[in-house]
Length: 512
Image (tube, rainbow, N blue to C red):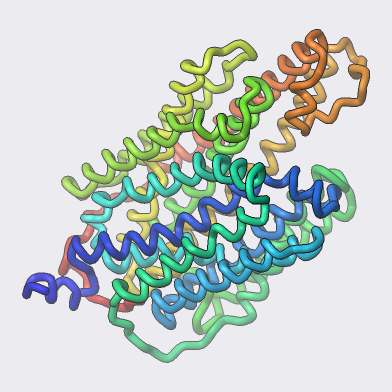
């Protein structure tokens, strides 16, 4: 190692050659988390056919989402206390244990339990990956590597349906979980060999009370979102009790964190304008972004008649949009040290993309949908990593893990709430448009409109009306997403801009 590289490593940051090695291991961990949801969704119909438990189908997804969201802030805080590498490897290990057990499930109850274990590890993978990036790359140079992060997300959105369809139709759905094992092992090996960061030890105390409260509060909210629309109704007594529990626990969490010696989410961070505005933007963007990521494939499969594999390939323009704008904005951030303009541009592009997507019809040619998908991906590419870099640049190195995991936490909360809202909009508007298409009379045959294959097999006259209703409902989903992005755009103008730090600009407070 040269004298310059030794000096860079001592400062807490790594030279480019070692950064690229570390990125391989970190990206593998990120890929595990990003790939999980898209690959599992494709296989769910086959899983239910083999294991039974159709009434518990949503819990295969909800169990993972619940534990991963609740655990995210905990991973960040623990990594600040004990070091980033060993905690990141622990998260990978828990995720791999859950994956192996999920592949061995003999009934739906076991699968739900093991998915919850997966979620415990998955909650740390994304947040800790970004925290490690913050440890080894100075903010001014972070943009150079931004395209790699966009490529991970883009690859997962395409590879998920492709791999899910391949394994489900080939060796069996259990391999959608077992494929995580070699990827995880690669990440463990690379981070063990290449991730060498000094750890600054200090007296600490884990905030177990705050951790318990945040887990309970997030559980109440996610259970409300999962149950209210499908089982009990949004205003049913049980649903209202859950949302009241969430509000009470959220208030209690704030009071506890104000008094805790080592809070899970230090309330003092919210006095930092970049931290608070950045998390508000991330939450609002998360509300809207999953409308396109989830319901655009639904349109391609249900209306255009594509298979899961083909719909994954059809989303390549969105992936290219994410990669191209993430790479471009990252390079410009590294050159200029400025970042505020990119979340603003990203929100504007997203609004245009969602407005265009709300105009798609049954007969819209694919090339037109591909252009809209590219714009949607381009909007995401401008925003996904920019906010994380801004927040990391604005906090002390000792708070790097906590601040990064908080940003991930608020994005996941926005995604969970947004997914529930958009799902409710789709269901409600589909019922309305079906009534319009069939003159208030349900079509004969009792068709399950949640079953894409059943829709494709309808007789032509009925199918045409159903597809028109389905497309109109999806259009409304995209329209409902626009106000959230517009609000994020307004918030983006309040994001303060401070110069991105370069090597040697910051003292090392804590490594990982």
